Length: 312
Image 1 (cartoon, rainbow, N blue to C red):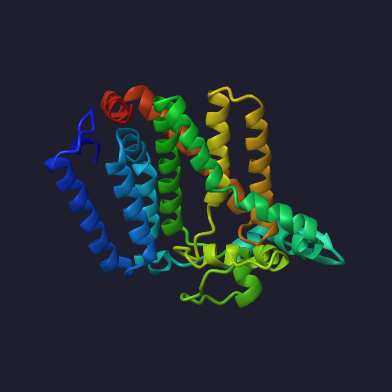
Image 2 (image 1 turned 120 degrees about the horizontal axis):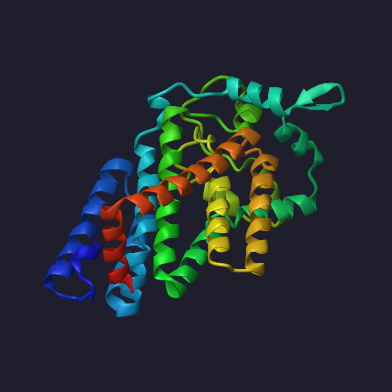
């Protein structure tokens, strides 16, 4: 999309035709793959309004197209359930978690999820809910800060974010895995049409009489995508680039959010400790791969220079 408008991002017949064509193609493809949803119109409305509103908003939405592409891929995964391609890990992952991290409680060995579920209270439920609400707003807010502060670092962060997600998606299909709450509600038998569940986060919704997490998890692309925990990956990427950009005390906030999300992932029974560790490893690998490619690929750096000139 960047090449459609050139470095000065002019509005002309060519750019209008390309943006309109992409918008229509997106609606048609979305309808064919996942059906029509109001979210699709909202996304297109935001993109088109910002594209045509001004030069600044045009550059902004072109920069954030990286995240839009990620979201579209995530949404389209609904059309290709990973359990159609490989067997889903249910009991095996549960057993490995218990063997490695089991906690003896009243004579029984429990997974950390099972143990923490028995220790919950309103204070922990509130903090857990607040931490888990940060998993998308904090990365996006940080990306917006970098966009206006340092375009090159914005591109580094955004592309690393998408790369880590792609690595996670590959693992989702190679190793479909049920989350801890699945066993709690459905046992060890595989039920392919199982819907998303708020699990322990339902306590936050109930405590504050809202349907916040219920509405979020109703839009999940795949229940059997617990390994790795990309929720746990995102704050690692944020903290890494926060440290690189020397944000000082803000990095303490990023660090607290990171540990809070890791804890909540297990506390709310959305992920095993193994999933969280896999998410951390996935983020680390993505950062290493991005830095390696950036340091060795002239073509990739040419792409970065071109993209930066478009959004600068």
